[in-house]
Image 1 (cartoon, one colour):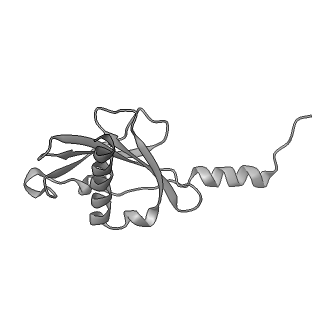
Image 2 (tube, helix red, strand yellow; image 1 turned 30 degrees about the vertical axis):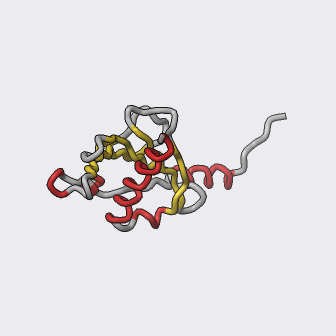
Image 3 (cartoon, rainbow, N blue to C red; image 1 turned 90 degrees about the horizontal axis):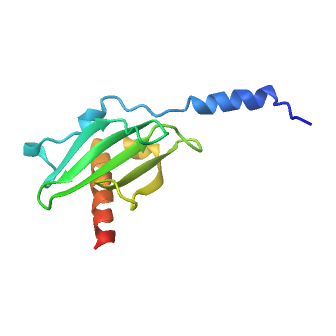
Length: 128
């Protein structure tokens, strides 16, 4: 016997699909070499096409210690106002990390930049 979906189920599914985070001007999180944050350079590179989820990706480089990483914010919102973020060192390795954060963490440029750098530093420390 096949189950027939109720119209409410279909409507809720469609509503969930439209819950997408939009960051206006994601390149404004970029730093330049002369304006780096303690030697860290953040560069918006667009979408990471290796993922199925729509996303924003930044490359992060520590110019002092020659370490490179990436930070990805997935656009689909989950469980209300939460979303997934991923990060790791480049070249991409199996030590990629992923966690769920509240979208409120994305309201302040300095908090986002600090989160990006902290994530890469934590990833470096797990390798040592």
